[in-house]
Length: 509
Image 1: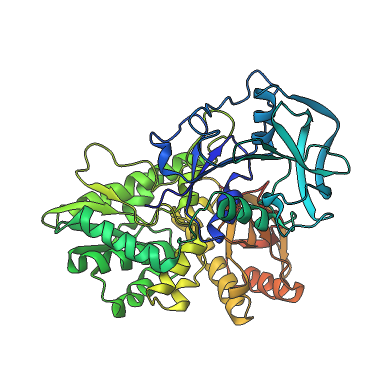
Image 2: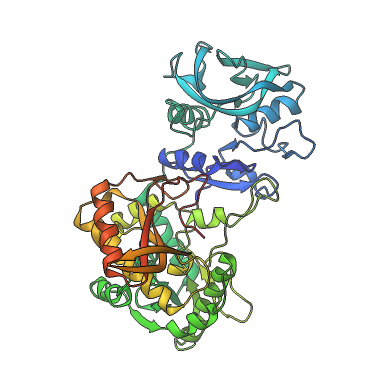
């Protein structure tokens, strides 16, 4: 794997966005917790320090060891990262009278400064901090200001070390991508070689070397991630890939049959396994979201263990884990909390004698789609909305029963079919319905009803790390709501979720 850019995470909600912007420059990068540095830093061509919810003046603030980085590898500190370096090396960082949050404009840029090449004064930047660098240490030189922030950017004399008190990774910083390109390409000389074609060639080669002539079990879901993972593995090992598609009883309506049909023409060796009863029994009486996820993850492992025993000499279990799954499942020991666990992150139990292979582990969702297109996978399949690994279990708030699953499957089918019919499906990144643990009073005909409430959710996003709710047409929502209430027994009220991520997550659990 190309080890080009290291991003040290201090718990900022924007850290993942830095990685996204770097990847958009066709540059490979990795996020690591600030207190868990990679052993060999010499393989990285540049390092970026993220922001943080902490003040660098706080005794509990992160204290990264930069001794092997600063002055040795081109370094860019963003917000907290910039303030930490100024504070740590003899400058003064103080609390601002007012929190500096939102849009600002550059009022000064030092002439000839490469970090700001092709960026003009008055360029808009995005501030998000309550501290500000009041005085720079010796050998630190101011290279940009805004009207309210004198030391908006600095450079350390004799080093390729920079600090900026704004966030270039958010779209509100209009020249943020240009600044990152200036730092990474012009200053750090990082090659822009991270392309779908290069990823396919490199990954297929690595898979051949890692797996050899061994056999691999892969759990297909019908979604983009597992399909692209399967195609990569098929390119590498051919018939030694054994795909299993498990019906956990929590799929969309008729999805088990339709997914199996979908794979018939792709040359993949796929076996369908109906384990509905096994999963429903494992979920019986469980309401806690994390416990539901773990119960489903354990059941998947048990099913795959059973199926793997039927494939002679199977030594690997392949998974479609992608980078957001990994990021959201890792805590930075305090600054950023684990948001949720993922059933395909964290390894396998000791009793399972398979090694894990995850060919997409370092890709964001949009990169997975581009890799799939590079390999010629049908665009309709690549355009499928993401669907959570635990399926409808995390869209049913509370305990799981077959009747609740039936209700939600019917509601979901009406919603998704409606999006397709109205040509809205491809304008939405992810959509689904949520069954709420709420009964509401309604009237149907002359009768009073006391039935379930469902919420509809549709978001637009690039990779799921951030998302905005979609402003679906009122007449569409009106028609879909009417169809759901009239056709799905047990539902008498429909609401639409207009929360964005952050602060809300895409899924409700």
